[in-house]
Every structure is written in C-alpha cells, then in structure tokens.
Length: 282
DNA sequence: AGCCAGGTTTGTA
DNA sequence: TACAAACATGGC
Image (cartoon, rainbow, N blue to C red):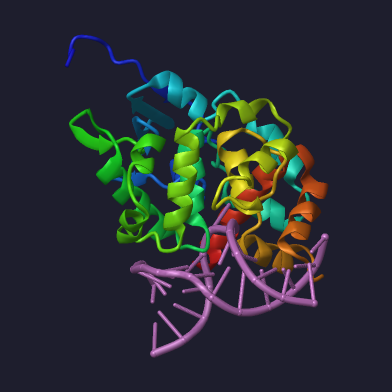
C-alpha cells in the first residue's frame, strides 16, 4: 500500500450516456456485483474495478485505468448513435430506457468462454457458473481490501477434464469448453481475428466447438468492437415479432433483417432492444 | 411442476 | 441447404 500517493482514477463527469446498471445488467457481461447506492464491483479478465456515483457522475477505481478506459469505450459519442438508431417508436422507447448503455470492449478469451456457457442457458445460471470456474481456476487477486479471482486462462481450463466441468454444472457444454480451451492453449490466436472482416472473423470463431453464429456475433460485438452484427437469441425473436414484423423467419433471417436496417450500428441497436425487452418481461 | 434459457451439434433428406 | 431432434442444468 502507498497511502501517500494520489490514486489515479477515471472520472465520469457527464452521466447522460453512462449508467452502470444499464451497462452491466444489459446482458453483455456477467462478472458484476451491485453493492450499495448504485455502486458496482466488477471483474474483467485479471482486472477489477469499483464504479460508484460521485456528484453528477461516477468515479471508477481500478487495478488498471488504461484497461478500463478502453473497456468502457469512453471516447465514443453515444449522442450521435442514439440519434441514428431512432428508427421507430419502439426503438425510441428502448433508447430512452437504456440511455446509459455502453458496449464494452471485453477480453476476447473471457467473452468466448462466457458466451459458450450462455447458450441455451439462463443469465443467473451463467453468472454462477462463471464465478465458480473463476474461483476454482482463476488467479487469486487483491484490490482495496477485496479478494477476487481473475478469469481462468485457456491453459487452466485445458488442464481439467470433461467430468470436472460437468461437476461444475456445465452439462453438455463441458465438452465445448474443454475442446475450445485446448484449441486456444495450443495456439489458436484470437487476436489475429481482429484484422479480419466481420464475415471472416465469424467463420473462424464458428470453427471453435460450442460457437455458432449467435455466440460468434456476441463475441464479435462485445470483444472485437465489430458493430455490424445483430445477435439473435430467443429474446430478439420476441422483439422482432412484437415490435417489427410478423413474418415467420429463421434466426439468421431476423439478424439479416436488422442489419439491413441498422447497418454498422446494428450491435448497438440490438443491445438497447435486448435490455428493454428483457427488463419488461423478467 | 413444468417451462425455458443470450443455441449448438449432429443427423437426415 | 434446410430442418428437427437431442442435449444437461437449475432458476423461476
């Protein structure tokens, strides 16, 4: 501890487009814990941050300010995005409801594994499984009196057995996690995909066990900053039929329908709609 | 008590 | 290419 040093921290002066509840609970990340008075403790990869209200904005204390400045996508102007996404009445409502959402720039491996776990699964359960794996296999860390566990490395996951992951409640996803962790630890380079087109990067991600088009789109959106994707899950199918059109379409067709409308801002549109719809019906 | 979840894999035509 | 069954688990 160095109590005499002034701790550098991130200050959010204008909270018009920064709301921790919206950011963390909109379904893009799973390692968050609401504490009190609108504050949150979060873990991303090997880093931890504490986000708390201060004055008209927020203060973020973290293990790595550079990491979280990028993570929160703080340089982006969301005023412009929200203006362009106001396509219809339901979009306006979703934008108003989720005003403080920001699409996070998350760790690629953590996002890959987390969204393999997410498939055909409930968010509360996904959170539980991820915390269990992190506690068991992640490096123990310490920050401001809090113990936390880094997200497990590919090597740490690859060193376990399929039965181990079944014992952790992963069900039939146990095999997917093990196979994909092995592939990553054996040299499959997630960073290399950054330079590829969205289409090519998606194809590469889909070559990993447990990654289909929806999970791939979530990884592209939440970890690669590729915003020209529109992940379609059961909630987004409801959004399509309730707010947009009644034509019976496949998930792939629904995704294409929305990308055709929202283009390079599709990922943002999807996230506002997901948060809005799920919070209405949950 | 069943339904369902931020779907993918595998098999079939 | 398109469609359907199988799939483990547990929160609600």
